[in-house]
Length: 514
Ligand code: NAD
Image 1 (cartoon, rainbow, N blue to C red):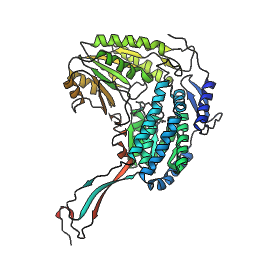
Image 2: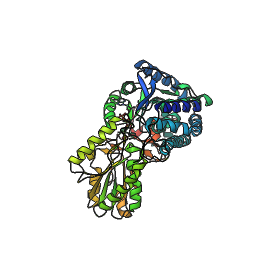
Image 3: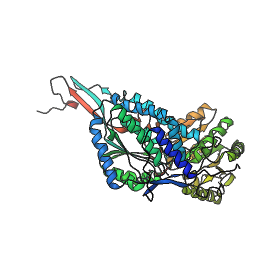
Image 4: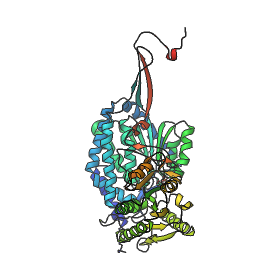
């Protein structure tokens, strides 16, 4: 285990302030004894106090976004695209500054933090293209002299609630697409990542000023679930896009449905890879270690279950354990270049990991490697852990739950049918993979009788999706789709139009009246 020198929290706070200055964005107002705070999981300590929004100020933010909607809706979509284009330019310019904030608040290692900002840049490019491609269809009308077509229109105010683990990418998937669709946005970021949110909002406001867009197209409100609930309950929020735990989705969905609002849910995952006997085991090991231990197991798409054919399960287990042993020296301060595994976001994640490991052992599981807390003496308030691999005799209840920490359960299977059955026998349905050289097996996994997830991969891990495809999952993951493909349709309303240019008034289905 390497030595660990606890970074100075004040140095982290200064680094955050400097990032704001370089972005040309106003620094957050630091308030002692405030209702909220910015913190860093690197030290587990408070950087500085920040005032949270209240019901009144959230109400005001929604009103401002609604007012801006009237003008934004009437702005031609390709002109709306200019705002997102300018945002993309600013994100490119300030990629390192935003990545530093992601590391400070979410604890992500450098290359993953930069990757998250790159994802924002990519979605800007995609959304600018979309702004000229919000296609409606024209269908043949059954009536002579009539045209039948669909047109797409902006929805209104979109409320965006995000989780701590992708503090900015998920916001950008929603916001860039919503903005080109003509919606305005009120964002409530995770209470754990207010600084990245304020910096992104500031850059978007700079972009809006540069292109002459109304500033009310985007508002940010800070706080926890109470502030989120204001967005959930408000009828002016036409679409609520919420990313977080399944428990959060269960609380939010019925409230939005009760007011006949729309919701888009991106919730927990419990992702698995099936490893067939023909699999290239080098790929399996590399793909699994990144997917399971990367981001300290705190991705919605993190690999949590490895379902391995009994002929290769021992070898796969051994090789993954060897790779995990090499990770031991790469756990620590995410600002250090050699670090691959940063901290858990907080005590809650660590407690959940401990409890899950105890339950797995009580179920007959054997911890093959990892699971211990590191640097508890040097960093009493921070939670660094060794990613764990646990050999399980079967898929017990604890394996079927999402524990938001780096635990990889390894289980054996005999037939592909059994593997698919185990794979699908969890409440969640986000991401999945099969490693195989057998094309027929791969096709069966991809077929409707195969994986029941929203993301199904072959010969790559479960994490690290590209923005070009629609992102999301089934069952307890919530059913929402964001980002690329035709996910933009969720942010718009569809009108079916019939235009009579023929002069007569024939009724459909041959009905006669008067
Ligand atoms: P969380 O559920 O604790 O919080 C998510 C967000 O919801 C936060 O902004 C929080 O303040 C808000 N919130 C919580 N309860 C609310 C309520 N009743 N009303 C309104 N807002 C409420 O999740 P987290 O710990 O920040 O993130 C981890 C979870 O998010 C994991 O389960 C992970 O799988 C999931 N996640 C899913 C995706 C996806 O795309 N499917 C992406 C990222 C994270």
